[in-house]
Length: 331
Image 1 (cartoon, rainbow, N blue to C red):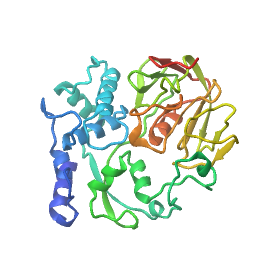
Image 2: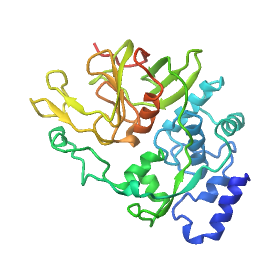
Image 3: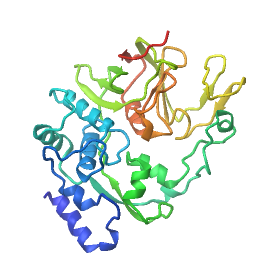
């Protein structure tokens, strides 16, 4: 056990009231070590949670961390294998586990966090309507709760955050909760982006051809195809407004003949980031629904979690090429 893990175990034994209810407990996560056959598809486990955290730290994002060994985590394993020069099998092996520990550190995967005043001050939205016409009436597309904001802050699925901290209040500054220790943002200058529609992943490349970071992505479908070929980044906008123009867009679930402007915020249709591409109406952006990334189709754009989109935005500039491969292409 590492020194940090030893300290965490000591803290837990000294603070029994802080132990978690639910299936995954901090001390189990810190003790989780890889053994062949230990990970089961679509099952939650302390080992799967630790794997997700290590992948996130190594900049092979598993998306919203939920402790489940699912499709996004398996794809993140493949991405880490590509980044490490290994065969991209998507399978966790002793060698891969060892490399993850070297890349992400074998320190604790969870940490205690004291909820700050800024986390709970809001303003929060009572609800976010599905209808775009109703969205356009709101002054801001805020988080609906402190828990939603905290989940995004620590790259977590909101339901998992709540389960991990059963009985805790997320609305009280000074309350102590458990969150994942996701690590620092990726660093570097992205020279090329590749969007793979079949694998539902966006990979970023440095000038030397090495992968800097990889993210699970939602791309287009037959009804709403993505662009084809190679485009370029035209601009990057933080906290963008969203404009729905019925003369350019024809979303089946939007019933209006008028142009709509939707205010900024994390629950804006494009989240907290818009990376504009040089094909009108197409971009790479965030999302108000991080748990759905890679599981549904988009309206043709490339959708990432808000935190992955923010990381990507910090590394790209105007003129970066974006290559679409294995996608249902727009005509």
